[in-house]
Image (cartoon, rainbow, N blue to C red; front, side, top):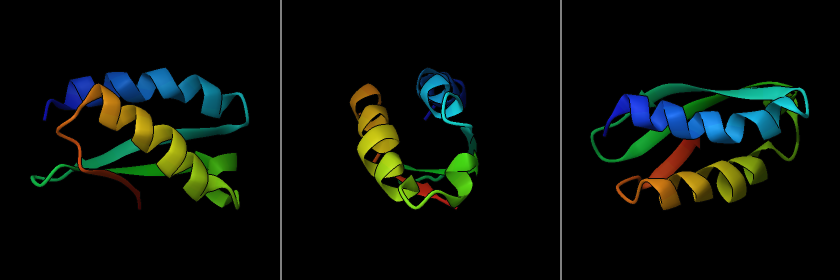
Length: 74
């Protein structure tokens, strides 16, 4: 997977996270298609962060990049 394309896609979801005081950063892309991210700011301690991760970020990333198997928070 192309890291720059993954970063660009995260850049599309980033403004909505930043609007709530949070952010997301790319940590790693594994060989088996797992994108590992770190939720920061308000997202880091938010009880809804796993829903944001799976229903928001992961859903968008899998649509944009079908080769992604999962998005995980580290």
